[in-house]
Image (cartoon, rainbow, N blue to C red; front, side, top):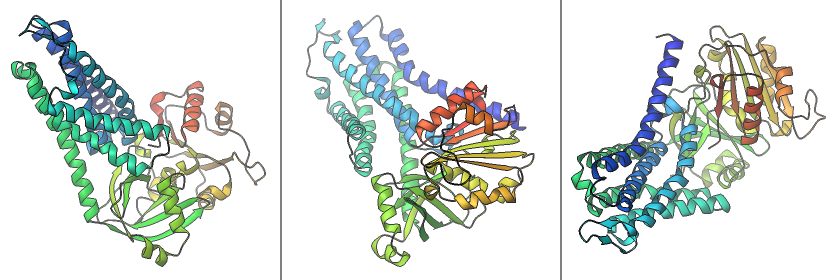
Length: 449
């Protein structure tokens, strides 16, 4: 299969997957309307449709968050988690709507409006499922508006997964549609099984990684407020430059970090910026010696992965690669630039790196990357220091359309653009590239999640 055929096949699979996800959520309403439309009051049909839609969205959320390898290869985990975040408010809205409409559902047995108990109390499974989902949603809202710790948020957020079995039980005992309509019964059992299998796969992977921890070789500080953890590479572990792993220290919750070491190295480097509660803890520990570190914290780390599609292989036909990085967004590019396999890529003509940092002292791998200019004649490096304009060879400016037009090669069908960094930089860079006429298909982005 040629690269073009492979790209077309992958695009078709991605499109089919997206269409299947939408159809899965919308389909129950159509079935309910066509099979029960002549037997139930509109309020009842609305309540039932909202309930099944909420179930479909719940399963979709669990599948998106499970980080299955198949979906990761097609869409990339960063894209899946962004969709997961967007679907969350929709799921909560549908659950609330279902709870609001159900008390007014028309009962065919009494031929009158039923002002029942609140739906949360209608059945024990329904009450339990709603409680789990509302608890997870509430803590998510609190985290978005306050400084609640990530670990606390994640533990409570995981309670949302417990809503699945109770939601299935609620569908089975709450109404007649589950028993009367075979397609709806198959929908609940089949989709619930898929979501459950995705969660089980993720849980199994997590347990396996915790039971097989990897030794930490050393911990260093390559730049201000930056920590690099070097881990022993597992036997048989392979990855592409630009992918990431989930790391867990001392059995704690996993955190995603890009691999900064080249794919052919015998170790794995993870360079981490100290920006949150967890990463600041790593930074404080790195300030002590290795032996002291190992006395205070586990000298091993659990690892799962690799994940992500943000690799040069995402653009197999490209001869010119332009990397635009912001701050610690350099890590996936560092993995490629430090790889001899990458520089031996067939047909590679030009590699451009534009790196926006506040100061050189905050830029890990800066000297090493700058040295590639002399080692590789087709590599061009443009550092942009937004905080200081006096450092040699730098400029205090912003990466916009004018800057990209002045420093990058002319775009053509064999040019690929890769973006990684803070959301503001990504948004501005993408907008500038589109104004310059760059096709969306040739812009690849890795979002912080």
